[in-house]
Image (cartoon, rainbow, N blue to C red):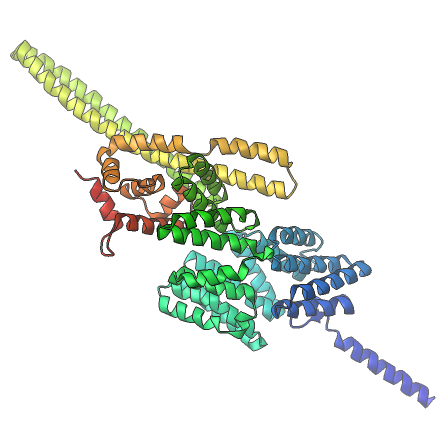
Length: 560
């Protein structure tokens, strides 16, 4: 009896120990425990992606997890398998396929009952779809608070880095740096030295944006010798890319390019680097090399999912076609470049408000001038009768000639003001129309990818939109009206700098009108950073020294 009691007591203690060993969560993460196989493979994949295991090893682990999930029949386990399949596809460079997979996964989880799985999948959907803006920031902030609340330190640090990157792009460098430092503190406490090392790339970017160029370059050069960075080909390549951007040292770009050349899984980066090489050779006057690299870049554009990189490739190829005299091809790829450029609906709304306000101002000016003209005519008629009564026909004719001269001068000023206001209104209309059409084009493309619209119907709608996008006719109309108002400027510009490309004539025209970089970017449907780069090239073409303002030099051309 005592023996039996001892056995039962021991069994009870073992059962309690077994229950206590399963906390319900997979530390240090907070995945819900599902089964021994699924849980162990989940943790193995967390470590495998962190330690940059070979793709075949990761592929084998993901396959085993998917098999275990299928055997269990648990939809949450299947969704977790889709999560890791998406991570693997993204690591292989197949971002579109990764987005499709994780989008299926998020449909299988419940944001209320399984918020952790939902947020992990939602984060990948946002990452792979390149979501930006206020809604994206709201999601990241929500996830950061959630992970911090449940004690998931690794994901809390990841969200802090995502918040920091968003703030960095908005120009809030100090707050961005604080979030980066908080993330590093968490990762150091966990022993995640590789993440700390990799985050120095982001910190270097903050120093560059704050104007501390030397500190940024120093950090990046230190990273080239970091074992953690060398173990991650993607991170190492990113360090080389940033060093080229900030130093313009071609050796960094060549090394980054050689690191991805011949790798079919990195054709997206091949296209980007070929565009950068084309741009470099164009700047130093080696046009054959510039054209050759631009053609290599355009061959890889279908593998590029970053809209900014697509835009650069399209712009570089359009420039190469234009320099080669292939104007039709240049125009076609310039239009495709506009399609790939980012569109911001909120910005379009601001443009619409400005357009309406400007048109209203034009109407008010015209009304005041008409009233003034009517009053002038009334006084003129009174003067005619006075002249007839006092001085006769001769004095009347002289006086009438004088009044006609005054009215002609006033009408000329009115027409000048109307033309100037119409020019501004035309700019805003073109800007609003192109942005709206590009927004619609993006939405149609999204609907096509989501299979909510047929491919043929999507192409038909996109072709219809394409025919309404602004092109040479809009620019010619704008230029004709501009020349009426400022007849001296364009002739003097082309006389001083013959052969200046049409794109730089446009840029100089907008600078002469006093538009800032943000407004120019919206009119040309490019990023403000691209405007800064174009301004720098225009300075070189005009051979301006560093102490001469580009704006002052351009405005001086319009003076008589």
